[in-house]
Image 1 (cartoon, rainbow over the protein chains, first blue to last red):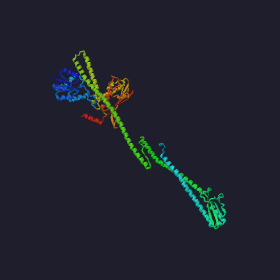
Image 2: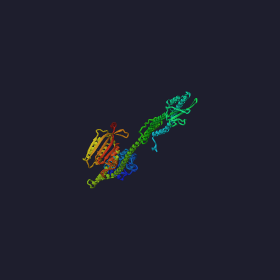
Image 3: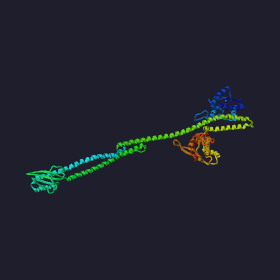
Length: 135
Length: 500
């Protein structure tokens, strides 16, 4: 059974994603931050990491880079609800969802998903990314 | 004080007059004395010479012995010597010429000077000594002709002096005018300068060196002032322009900041809602999958899912506002195609009460824009226009035309103007001022988000285009968007690049 690590600072999002993937037959663990995720991966390796982009402390793009460095074989899917969350001041080039997802892709995410998504989309994406490894 | 001062010409003339009023009488009396004296001297000289000659004739010619001779000589004195009285007195016997004037009497004293006698006769008495004769020649000369000559000379001199005085005053007036005219001119120009008029040139023609130099100095000063004034005015104008430009930029910046704030806010909210939607959609979705097709809660769960999907769409729309602009892919587009496409869509939506008219140039240069966003922009404007005319008949006019517009440095720049005019309600100035602000709406709650025109503004800015609004209450509103036109050479360059 392939194992997946879901990283998101929102417990509801973590639980929902975990529930859908468990139902689809995957072994799913969760982490609430990038640091947690790295520690979890060090304890038990995973085939796939699904990570949020906008998180406090270490953001998803940095997390993807760190995971790619420490665990090169792990595949990554980036998810984001968008928005320049946490930015309160005027910024001429406010980073948007698209920009975040694009940089996540650049950092090494094999696929990006925009929140909210349907269960079918999620499962199809996971299958697609894990299928790349089998091919 | 100043009012009491005489003008220069009056002053000079008065001086000349005063000086002459003192000098001329003195001159008159002095000259009169000399004239009188000389005439008197000539008279006295003549009479004494004539008397002496006559006396000699009596003494040397032994005329005293002949009565006839005495009478002849006395008559000669009257007829040829100019005397009016001639008498010879010898040893108690008196002989007097009958030619003389009988009323003349011999005065008691004979040592009188000219004019002293008072009767106008000048008497000369000469003693004659010859043999035993002890005689006296008494002659009286009429002073009147000499007095008349003196009077005539004095009168002539008086006229002469009067003429001289007149000429002197005339010359004084002319000279003082020649002196005061350039001064008046200088004064006029300096007054003009002090009242701010620097344009009057100083043309003073004068032979007086000081005045000439003063005029030259003043002209130099005026010239300098003109320069200073021009520079100052240019500076003030420059400042005014930059002030206006600064205000405009500040206004734009404030507007942009508001847009950015709203964008930031919208993004933040979108992020939160999207996170909330994830468990809703996923759990509902899977719950539906787990339920048999006949289960009762299915319908409810399907509604939950549908509502969540709608919420997703709403968030997406709000995000469009901040996201689409960043994603704009500028390409060379023909606005006529965009307008045609938007019109096609709009004609389906527009109520039949609205008549659509177009006024589109045959050939237009390309503009750099995002076709999707441009269509979005046009639809927003059309919708806005038809909502302004809602419930009434109206005309929606749409136009596209080429024009050249001078930029800040005055160089004409080609541009394409797109305009939309409605015959709707119109807006007041205060509304026009705020129309592009996010969430600003004149519609009642629930009828519009108030994002439409701020999205329009954002899109226009992302194209590097500009937008202008004209509106009049009860007449309608016109929106104009000015797209910078792309030059033919640039078009060729872009096409080549895309082929490669």
